[in-house]
Image: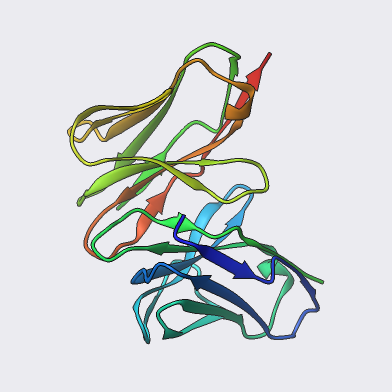
Length: 112
Length: 110
């Protein structure tokens, strides 16, 4: 599905450190998304991108920033990780003109 | 405002039929999605309904009523591998964002 990979797949870090998660897609999809998924909250949108260097905030963007310098890569940065950011992070991509989102395998992040 | 609701948990028996309901409220609506998510894995796309009616895709069918703000996912001939969470989401507006339900956890028992 959309050839989406995420790295790293698992990460343990300490409170206060910066963390960058990478999403890479090979299908030239225009739209890309970062979600977090937590029990009881479902999928929540952090940031999304509608093209190179075009990004916008989602519903839970505080403490996160993103960058998209190439169509295929969408980076999510936790500027100073906190324990509340322990979660599973999913990247998704959707093609131009299409609404269907295809998901990467996810990154499990633990902030100690 | 926008909201979406689906049951938290359901249980069914192998070989049976189960219907998972989803209701939504929104001022703008383009279509409704169903995704399947196995434990520890990413969501995978099942169906997308734009028009009213039933769409069948193998053992899975999805129904939409735009006037009632209602959709359901119908799973026939249940198999153990169908044990998963089923997420409904709707697309409203032109910003390509989806509004997600919390998911229905389906347990299929022998």
